[in-house]
Length: 172
Image 1 (cartoon, one colour):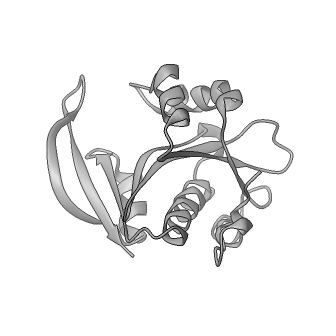
Image 2: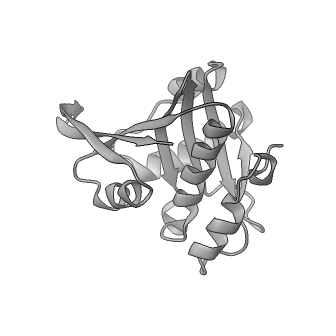
């Protein structure tokens, strides 16, 4: 089981605890597997109007460039969040991040992002990329706080509602 402390120089556990006084203990980040699929799908369905399919998650789990990490809290039987990202050459590409609605606004999403970014940096990545819905103000604020900058607008990126995506980049 990979923990946040296993990544050299990373203090995701400490940062999560400092920024989230209401979080019930330190967050542990563990690599996901097909056995975690139902828990991930539950969070996904509670978080998005157009959730990823089970097959899509299974494809990501099988891809050697794709990583799925879960956020676990002490005393919780199931994960409370997840992040899925690619490591491709110099890039960390954030594909999907979600926190169970009952555990939002506790710094867990920030902890997952910090973990993924440091995981990529420790493996030679030089930048991070992501797309976010134009209407997702809380996520955009978090990404900007972490140093992500708008690189372009992708018109009608999200279907079927045809919502624009903001493409953002963070250089390490």
